[in-house]
Length: 196
Image 1 (cartoon, helix red, strand yellow):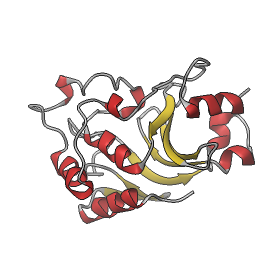
Image 2 (tube, rainbow, N blue to C red; image 1 turned 120 degrees about the horizontal axis):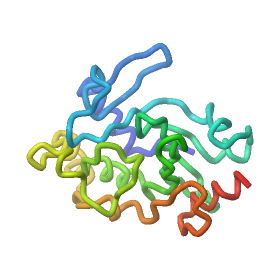
Image 3 (cartoon, one colour; image 1 turned 180 degrees about the vertical axis):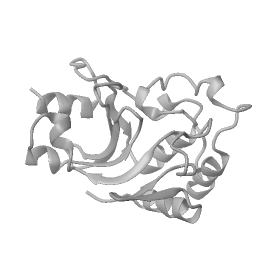
Image 4 (tube, rainbow, N blue to C red; image 1 turned 30 degrees about the vertical axis):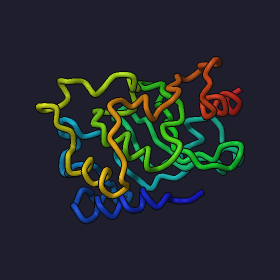
């Protein structure tokens, strides 16, 4: 498991723009000023932390080397405690996945096949990605005059020479919910096997 270069570049951009706060548990990075826990309209609320797999046993209800060797949490995706993590699939390919808190969000799926697509998803401007709803563009009321976090979005588009998707569904192919035994999402299927 490794930190993808595009995410390392994003962390450098965050540092250069002072979008972090230092806490007793370490540095927390945001896509907006960390002085306010509330993200501005058009900016995805996400907190990048160095949590790793220390709390996976609580999410899965057991402590398992088979689980912790394939997952590493790197961000909180919502105020409800939902998380984003790196996951090694059955072929050893690293993906970015979502783990809903269960007490709020129940979204469990592959968010992005690679780090650049994950950054593109964040640049769209959803308030929180933990709730899904990727088949629709961000709520009109969440955007100020249709603006997204232009500083971050412009950085993503120019740094990686990519386009901005109109909807998250262009990236998140199979948004699935906890317990969805019919889901075609590979991460959701894997979670089902680990929790049986």
